Length: 172
Image 1 (spheres, rainbow, N blue to C red):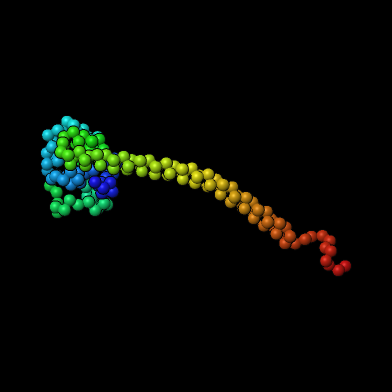
Image 2 (cartoon, rainbow, N blue to C red):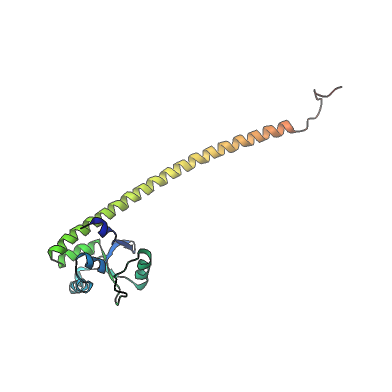
């Protein structure tokens, strides 16, 4: 199973990486209703940090932002969102060879996404440190240039002021 295909089906909702029930059903090559039926029969295995039902607003936002569609025109029930732990728990209730193979591929995709996010976070932090460092250095350079410009302006003003007293260039 292609890692890229699975990664495109991992979304972020409520600050969690999730997969939707209809995407999982597609990957497991089953119908969504059978997946939901298996989950409902084992609902104690799926606390809210493993699986939750999307609100209409979350689903509409997801559809607009990511163009998700289950190609059925509309839905009667809001989809379930499965966290990484919820997908792992699915492996305990779906026992076909296809389900096992798919589950392994999905776990690898979640690990890849997590590692990518951590790397991205580290890079962001490093860039922030560099930005702060160089901002201070640029401020120091800017202040030095300002000081030199002010000093030059003062010297120019001093030379251009009207002199008083005896002047060498005037005839007596």
